[in-house]
Image (tube, rainbow, N blue to C red; front, side, top):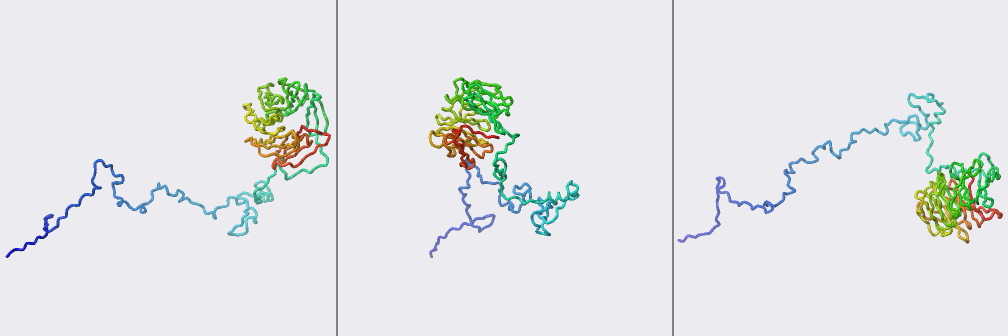
Length: 425
């Protein structure tokens, strides 16, 4: 009899810890990502503790230094309805929603311990003082003279003359070699003062009314005229070949700026030292001149080449030139120094007034006026601009706010070519 042999898988039985019958389980292979390498940097995410060991953040009390803690959480705030009235003696204009009639219907109550008699005022005076005035609607127009148009004085048929407020005009007479004094109340010529040469223009010395200045031709000079004695008290001689035609004085009375028409010279004269300190060359045929209210600039209209030269009085130099101006003549600043009004007088036809921004030197608009506008004057309030038109024989009145002509004053036919214009204060 043959023996049948069957091959079966061999089962290996090991003894583990002295126990028989436990199957053999080979150890797991190491994770290749867990095998350390000598050159590997440390794991930046490795932490020395298990996050699961920490308590939940919402279970922890907030520390005192918590930046999100409200520092005013325990700050007591008064109930607005329980606040004491800080002004119990002043009636309210709002009704009380909780009790009684409105406070405005109740008599004013004095503060505790104070009676109307103790303030030195009667009860009626205290009641008037405590009367509540409702606020005026906004905006409100507050008129201030002289710019206000809210009230106008009645027009009188005949001019009323007050001798206590009389002014005095000083007018040069080139053909007679003197200046004439004219009283404005009553109108009369009060005196003549001889001046060597041909006086061409008279103006204030800005020294408190003590002196007037007179420029003359043949010889070219600047004279000081004492207004109290009506006599020439001093002079400054300028170059003999100069043809002086205009001047302005600094607001503090320290310098005079004089133009020479034929040779375009511009003289800076120290009135204290009585001498010329500088000579500049400006455009051809300088005519109109104006100094800014703060004395920082002098604007010179040069009719010959159609430019306006702007001179800085600190550096005594031309800092800007406005080009392409049509035959400029008169020029004036407004009282605040923000606008300049310059007359353009073409050889034929009517002229105009150019309005210039004094800060940017840019022309803003033009206002048509009469033929050959000569002198420009702005009223002390700045409301109106007046221009005399030489050929049209008229005076144009302009509203400075709207830059519109509001009136043309035609002069009598016997008065031809007006070249002077001033205001009587």
